[in-house]
Amino acid sequence: MKVMLDYRFSFFVGWLNCLIFFAGSTVVHENATEIDVASRILSRPKRYLIFPEGCNFQLVYCLTIGAYGRDGDLVLGLTAALAWELPNKVNSKISNLLHRRSRSVVYPKMEAFLQSTGLDGRSCVMRALCEAGQRDPVQIGTGSFVQELLHAIFTLPKDGAKFERSADHAYDRAYETGGDCERLYPTCQHSIYDMDF
Image (tube, rainbow, N blue to C red; front, side):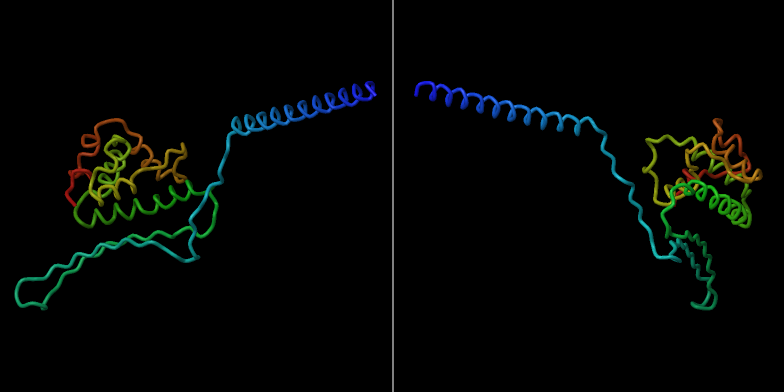
């Protein structure tokens, strides 16, 4: 009988040791799993905002001036408009190329518009690119709405890419210039950051 009790006791102690061993190994395994998860770099997929096909964003500025004399006889109106197509597909590989392509279309149009107002359009666009490339990052966001909008238009992507057409490489050179923009483009008397809008 005593042998039977010793046998049951040793059997109980054996099971208790096995239980402690398995419980301990489970805790060690859970801790190791937590450490593995903590040491892994977690990533989140990029999210994109897309719009229905054909949507665009338009910026229109209208200036209406009434003439002297009787009201309603003569009204002069000046309108400037820009339109951007909104993205309707997710394709991040060509986005920087499209940014430069759209700018290579916009800059000559801006040059022509400024030329029609009596300014040296080419010189003013080049000066704006030069100033945008040299603007202190601390100053970004401190200008008026129109100044910040112009800064966004004249800031080129910092992806190392260049304009496709060789005729447009002057825009890259103007943006990357490190000199005094006012001295480099003397025929343009106005800075986009000094104008009061």
